[in-house]
Image (cartoon, rainbow, N blue to C red):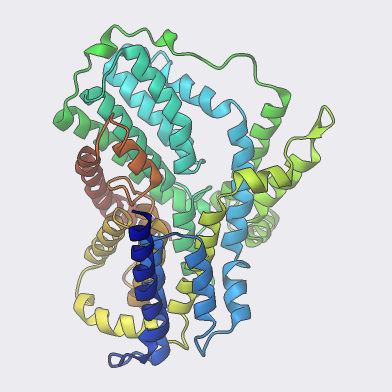
Length: 487
């Protein structure tokens, strides 16, 4: 068995290396340079490794391979990947959210939803409030982290309800946990990688950032409507037996013992400060367009998205309770930072920059090839095409790859078009790249849920794809028009 795995690995590696190092020497289509072919080959080869082997070391291999492209320098590749503000932003944000995750607040908030007076009104109230708690917390927490925070809470609910594997109610709660983790992660760029990749590519191309406030004004309504419609789908199509919840005493769910400590309160306020620094400047500048307040907020906003979590991190290290800091960087770096995700993020930033590099010409070729096919389409149909592409790909492969590839294609094709809101398209792609909940390759939590016995892979696929198509329609016909109005 082990020998068979090694053989499969080496075959996959050889195929990938042939794409990475040999694609340049294949005759290029008209209008595409040899370097363009080389970058495409690197992308395909690394994509194969990402999907079948690992996400970390292939991302490092990608940087070395890009250094062989004549138009690119290794220093510029490194500065555009590990030195990119998106990479630094994510690293600082992982640290700040790790500190919050160490407190009892996440579980307290979750329990506050599902043990509230509204949840006691009936079975569907309980199920809806349970999912709503995930939506709320997921706007600020990584979807994978959030899923594993909720898993023990869900197991306790199963135990108290006496549910068995195979019960539709149990399946609905598990599927809702996975789906709402994905939906919530697309509603804000806070601690979420995939929208940031799309936003970063837009900023690299146009030199103007999509601010957090307008992203959230666009994406939050889409997420909330997706949440409501998915719950309706569960009620009308899955139709679980809710009798186990009718006489269930919610107070039996164990709460968090003891009061919150001073350290926990300070960590929470630190996190709230970071969110305020992210959101308030862009929001206020929608209404105040001149004067000293505007100038200060514009200056602070110009420092970039990495500054608020940097301030939060430093404060956590400075503030000491009982002679100990609220957080040590060493602990956070080793336990709180998802380094494989960061390394892959650096790789996707590098390949995205290479694909959009004007000297290589891939975007010009792609635009020239695809534009005639969709140039006559209405803007809303183009948005629908990009939204559907992003949603399908993210549910079948890597979210980061989806955000990079689909955003790059969209920016190439829409460049120069005046009748379409390009930020609106980018937001739709970044948002839907997060809506990964249908198949095991989409996200780790999908694989865990599908193999848990409480639901199965086929159920996850069925309701995951229903949720996906709902979100595509909402992103196109609700989210995009909002973005078109505010940009």
